[in-house]
Length: 175
Image 1: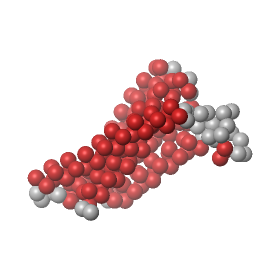
Image 2: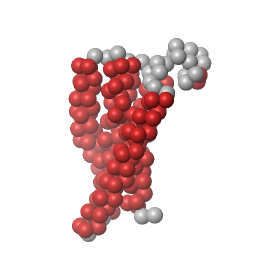
Image 3: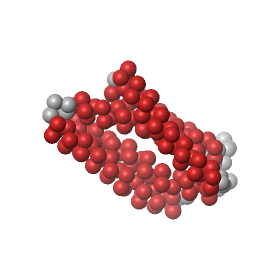
């Protein structure tokens, strides 16, 4: 498999994971965690600001550490932030965890697209095709994620976490 195709498949998987929760997080913040509509609006504004900052920061990381190391660091960090939000679903911590995950995902994509540029920099037509392939993979994940997320949300919902010694029974208890 060509490197660009591998990046497209990885991009599809990453965007699928993000798009499963992202369309529903505002709804959960409002109806499950009982934040005000103003807070939810502020949350989405912060997400945009966090993404812009991530693009700048990850540009420096990409140049300093390299594309692959930056992708790995940011990918692992995004996963850790979501896992922590799952383990400790205090409403404010969930919002911060999702914002952190958004930061690291945005940073990941800077390094990802830099690699595509490096791979195909000598031929503009193959560069255009490579970016198109990468975008198709990412868009596939964004297209499938909300469907899967809607299904999961309608079946499981967003349950508040019961802090107990038996946290692994999370899906079986309802506080």
